[in-house]
Image 1: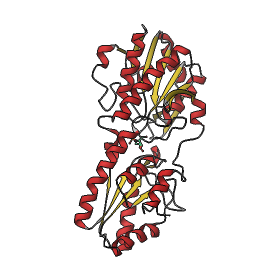
Image 2 (image 1 turned 60 degrees about the vertical axis):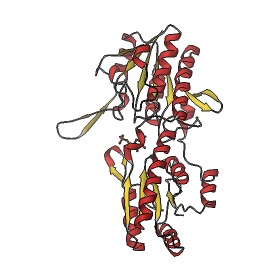
Image 3 (image 1 turned 90 degrees about the vertical axis):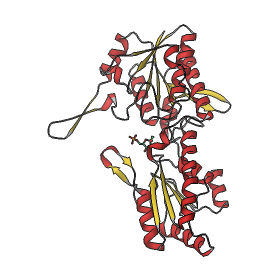
Image 4 (image 1 turned 30 degrees about the vertical axis):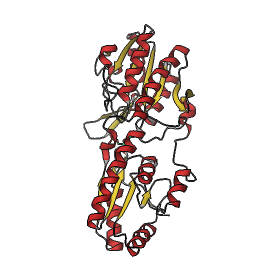
Length: 355
Ligand code: F6P
């Protein structure tokens, strides 16, 4: 067997753990492994395949990023090229990708990615690519699995930042608004916000009313708490409003913390600052949870290939790792359930969701 591994979409702590487990498990079975560089790059003529043996994956479990590189752009089925007049043209390069896959005598692909990459992989599977998926994302928005690796590390980073913001907010008697990632899911904001004792948490699943946010800050002020910490998911939006985009063409979210901070200062008279944690949340050494999940996912992906379970992704269904058809996992994106226990707990602790 000759198998290939690719990492696509935004990086997440734990990718290298998956790669190491995949390579070692495959080599243990006497299989050969190859890395595809920069997403699907090596299958689209960008570079050669990268032979991967035990020496190439030594000592990488604890490293952030991916030794294969990744790309959040470049869907082979909707490849975009800029025309001389500045417009973009889209074309399908999937046949070229499949031809290279066969020419390199590859038998299977393990594609590690989030919702976007797994969607591409499902389309390629339908066109004949023998592929197994591994769900990855700091956003935790892939259904069918209790968790994606990368999320736990991102939440730990965000919680640590919120703790730090707390002390400066209190010293200066200010309101601090912290923007965290998550795209259209509020998992990072909710978990880090609750763990970091935020006073207000804004998530996409609960559109907010700025009057209610300010009410909470004024109430704290009246109680002698002269500072407040607001955690806003990048995809949070006001009731009846829309999400904030910094790059509408590529649908890049951002800017909500700044807008909320501006309104709070104007409406309450409290000095307010905002900060965006951004890509800090994607870096660093994976937590024990993410390392272990990554290693288990990698080994399980090789097992799925051995069983011929293509078109599936590995998933966590505690305490087991299972296989879920990609089509089922991608049918509905995972979002924070507004009647979840974490939301109920936060409300009981006095946290406002601005609703
Ligand atoms: O999906 C992971 C993620 O980090 C999102 O939380 C964020 O919106 C997006 O990727 C940022 O993407 P980029 O790396 O292209 O800026």
